[in-house]
Image: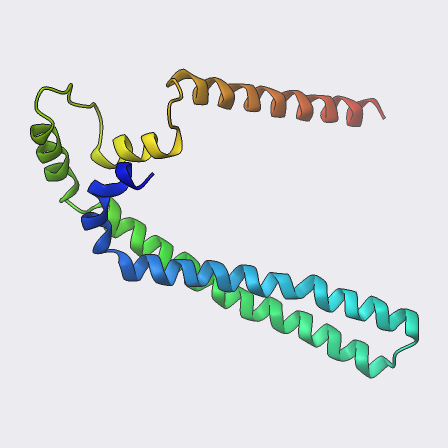
Length: 158
């Protein structure tokens, strides 16, 4: 796996802090939402035991607090993600990597498209023909369309 990523490491090194903060916001977002059902479980357990109204007020304030904190974490996740992706997208060092990679691979057929797409496709879809992901996407879209059409038909018939 790392053999395919080896040419990307020097390039991604520039974005290590953006990737770090992005991962931190994703973990923070998920960690906060994990607390939500746990607090609901405690509230339901206390409901069965006959808890006071004050305790339910505390539970509701905890849920609202988690939602408010999570909205800030989601903002920072969006901010870090958009800043990092725009820098990554507009970085002009991508094309020199592609040309130097093609020149180093003498005797091997140069690839079409971008440098990153070439290596990431090999990582995400190893040894899969190019038409298989496209066909799978078409099948999923057709199934979604059929399910929504059926649901619409059943709604109209009522």
